[in-house]
Image (tube, rainbow, N blue to C red; front, side):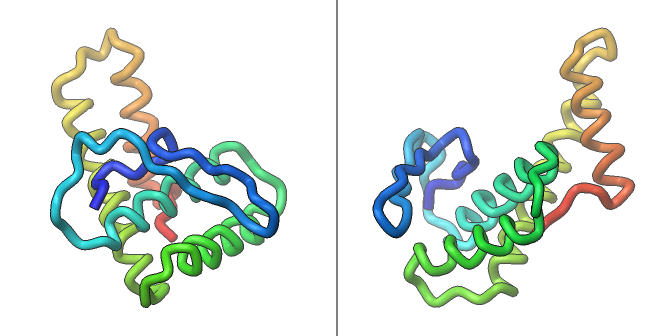
Length: 128
């Protein structure tokens, strides 16, 4: 698995009738459960749509989930995808927690992490 399949590590090329995805940045590639990659991609897409206030957010995200499951061409359920998204949310929660522990409050990064932490604690960070 790629193990770092966020939106900065792949390109989407629009083709007639669909898209082609090209993954890059394989420095974290390892053996693991494939759903972590799908969950990471889906979670990042969900956060991007939500944070950018995309009109018809639910429709776009529903289409994305349908597309990613079809494009992956491996028997995967929505429940498995939800587990992958939850993994990514928990992973990000741990990163943010450590960011706040080890980054001085004088750094802008600290406040970005604190804002994410507050969103997560308030239940505003989505999964799938």
